[in-house]
Image (spheres, rainbow, N blue to C red):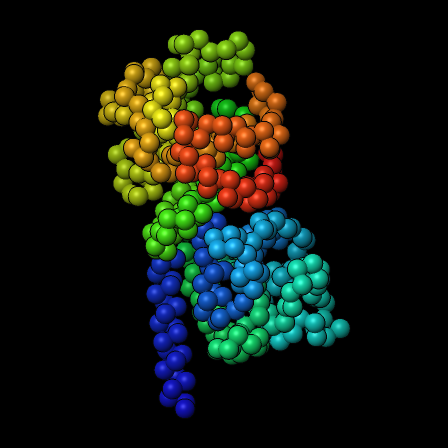
Length: 415
């Protein structure tokens, strides 16, 4: 029996190493955090869990997962978007772990001894009619010991689906996995910080292109793609790779505006002259030059999104810039006419971002317009299905309408 137990443990650790290799390829911090939560739960067969990040003196929930709740939804649907923030102190389980840098293994959260400083907040259980029992919470630390977040895993299960405590092996697997993915998490965090700085630089040039807009468009794009991938039965590995790059590429969609002169970029009234409009449209070309020639799948997707997110699905000349040759483009050039792309000749990522970008622009205030209410913004997207937008993408967009509305609430300008 001892030999069999050792063999099982070795196989489990070998599978963890393979998972770590896959996670090492992820570039976006949010996509990585979500996968860390998913894979940790899978390793120890846990029904639910959450992952939090440190923001100042608070813990902010990034992802919450619950298989019991998910099974109650229609196929392809997701749980409501989670957004919650609370102070880092010793009163809550996650707060205690973040404050002390320790881990907690709790057999039953409703039986926490009274002398403990932390308590379990049962409000979510009451609201959702769920029963949290066993919980394992672990501080995520970087190489310098700084707490980056908290990984909280809920309701370990045996092979028959019965809730059990997290045993010694489960602790070993979780700690081993969390320790080994920290380098990957730090690398993704550095990438995220660099992307944020580049986009902040663009925001300095064009204040209406807020980081809230960038985050919303990026998150809208992921929701649209996830549902599209489900509908089209895209293999899991392919979907993971695409969504990781899309999360970053969508943020760069208007980065080329840093190359547009203030006289055009910040003009609010009167309307653009034809010459000024041509200059403004050049932001697609100048931005794409940042990623050309592409050196990776991410570079290629960034180039495609930046260059083609203003194309019209039906090939109408209102769209731009078309089948454009980037080789001889210089900053300040006026873009010349090019044959317009249409239909599926427009890269999928650009077709997705086109919907996400226009919807967000409609539903938020700009210096030249008031914000539309959300129903009118959705109706406008529907109105242009098959002309400006890919009708399949629009259909998917409406399938994830609830998630889009939740993201709108979570990512406001100025936050």
